[in-house]
Image (cartoon, rainbow over all chains, first blue to last red; front, side, top):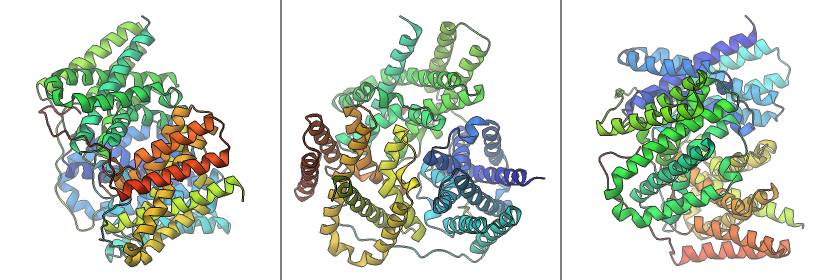
Length: 213
Length: 213
Length: 213
């Protein structure tokens, strides 16, 4: 198996996991099956889509190749069927989601570099790719984005993309780079879940009369 | 009258109806007149704009031709004036909105096909065009998108766009195709409203400790 | 100092002020530091980014020049540190924000004109640039956009951009145009805050059985 294929497989696992978190979120808002599919799709492809739209990188991958969207729609509907057993699978699910986060961050950084943008922008776009699927999901479900409030999610994306870029800069063999970045991102996220690590919160409750618009 | 003109007239009626639903939604949130106009515009052109941005199809139609935006802004403000009698016009209003939904879905599918994308993508973009104006409206008004929860709205868009694509594939005369697709989409939506048809809902109320990000 | 430099400095002050309103909003929602930075960035560059994406004007300025994003992230984090004294600085803060609003509206209109679009579209994009940073902030923080409900914010953007376009049309010297438009926009906004000017509100509380989707 070639490296590109390996990444594609991981990416595919990642979007399926993301679609399932989207479908569950839609279920919490008691949406109908169409809402489930749309939220599932937006969650799975939202991060990469936003990245490519910000970079002006057309055509979008899922517009060119419609099979991804079909697979995501299918995964979203499947989630409805297996929802009753989801609670028993939650550890497996968190594991797959953590893998997806690491893969998305690496792919986002990689694509941005390949398009000729700066390493810092590659890290930024790694974060956008890894995190904004969830953000779009939460906006569509009318709730404050979870990734801005809980656990180390965005930080994992930032550090994973940064590690990938640094190793790339020092010309580490691409297989080794991928293995190290993936392991780091995945491991860090799993540890963050296990030990409830989180970032410091900013709590500002002062309201002034003239709210700044 | 030529077919292109006929479609443009229907499309125009559609965006006016959409602008009015946007204005009413802004009124429920007690927005000021500026908010009314912006929500009206976003509702009317949001679906087509998102479609064209996803397809990378520039310049956007309302950026090139500013008259549409002016008409939409006017319709939004008009809604404020006629709001007291809107409740007596609600049946007319729902009828126009149903017509708009069918037209938007067909136009979205048609444009996507003409840009050279696949039939399945044309259906997807028909749904995006028909539905996302309302979704953007609800996001700007900070409420869960109605079309994901109530009635057959997105499904009408999906089936209308699909019917259009299938008839197009079998080389049905374009006037006949338009007539059939419009009649189907409009009729289906009106029946769905009349008989309170809706999709099955997905209700998932289990929360776990470690929310997936 | 050249005019372009002068505008860049004002623009930079503006995005820093916007970043700080974003960070404070994140603090009200008790987000973590990463959420603070992301909301800060989205608030500061959201309006200009949306404008350029609607116009198809790539590459985006902050994608090409990553220093802006770094400065915004820094300003967002700084806000967390100086938050305890923010209430004593609120007048200074509102002043800077008003300056930013005027600058954003002018820059938005100016760029749109230079890209060859119509004067009316330039005004529309002036409003988008001035206002949508705040709108995106409020969407990410899950609240109804303030600028649609309170004070003269969007109207200031509209009139400032319009004044700039009109003076440009009558070939007023660009320095004079800038000075007049800036003074007008800044002054109007400060007066609106001081005297609690606001637009008429649209209050529509009638709900029908068949909500229009």
